Amino acid sequence: MIEFLTNPVVVTVLLTIAGVGIVLELFTAKFGIAGLIGIFALILFFYSHFQAGLAGFGTLLLFVAGILLIFLEFFLPGAIAGTLGVAALILSLFLAGQNALQIGVSMLIAIAVSIFIFFLMIKTFGKKLVLFNRMVLTEAARKEDGYVSNINRTDLLGVEGHTLTILRPAGTIVINNERVDAVSEGGFIEKNAKVRVIKVEGARIVVREV
Image (cartoon, rainbow, N blue to C red; front, side, top):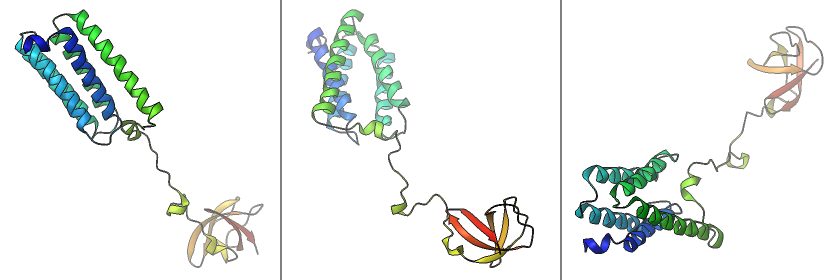
């Protein structure tokens, strides 16, 4: 069995299954069957190479660390954990392989098939990358949902008050014992002058001297 699993053709198949499993997980919200099958293929790869004496405990630890980082990527924001996990996996594959060239060829084949599946999922099946969607803000604060950028004081329209400071043309007025930031319609308005609100544009309150 060990001899069979370390065969270059079988190694290529195992790495391809692992790569396709990781790619399919990019399109799912949670870790699922595809990811489990991919990890199982990698476990078979490392188990056979460890039993054959080609991989040591350091390589296995690097492999486990890579799997854990990729698994954490589904729960953490950003892509740092996933990137480090993939890098750790690739390095552990080279360290476990008996022949670096053979492992390199197997990995190139696995990557090529995985890229093909990746574009097939997007172009043919119209799938969306759930992993990257968590990195991008897609929600909008819409007025229909109750979000407003500022308080609209339309209730002050036509109400009279007096200036607390000189309006140059901006300043502070008092309306119904409430301090309100306002701007004059044109020139300066002296302190304690009587004014009326003639326009309200969001938080911008325009007054005219009475």
